[in-house]
Image (cartoon, rainbow, N blue to C red; front, side, top):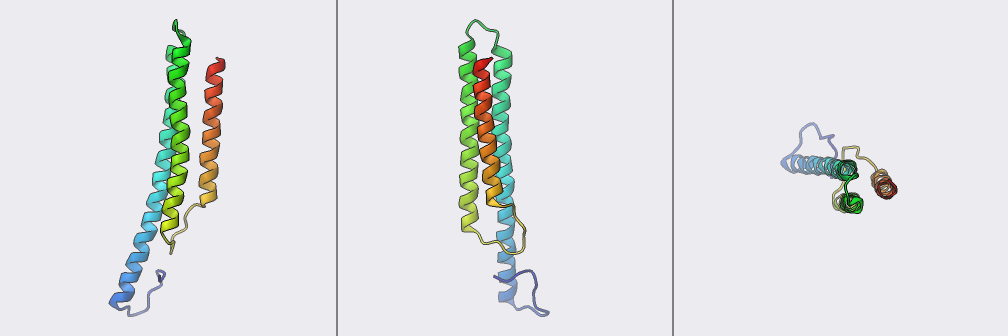
Length: 128
């Protein structure tokens, strides 16, 4: 695929190839935005778990509050893992042309850190 450096007088095929390349680049950038949205959703699940524990922690049944909070911690971890897998799958199907995208290793590292952090928060919730 050609880069954005078109010849001085591009023909229809060259223009079509350039448009295709730019569309693929936009798709890669959309994939990064989707990954970030899934990370935010996972962190919202962790925040919800902490909020549930804070609100319902002093009830007669603290284990119920902890159990429900853990459901959201598990959901967060699954969201992080799913986001990393989906991001990798999308990256493997699309060629990069003119855009600079974040490295897949960095995305996997972020998802792993958030997953481990969520598991730690879940452990702390049981100790409170």
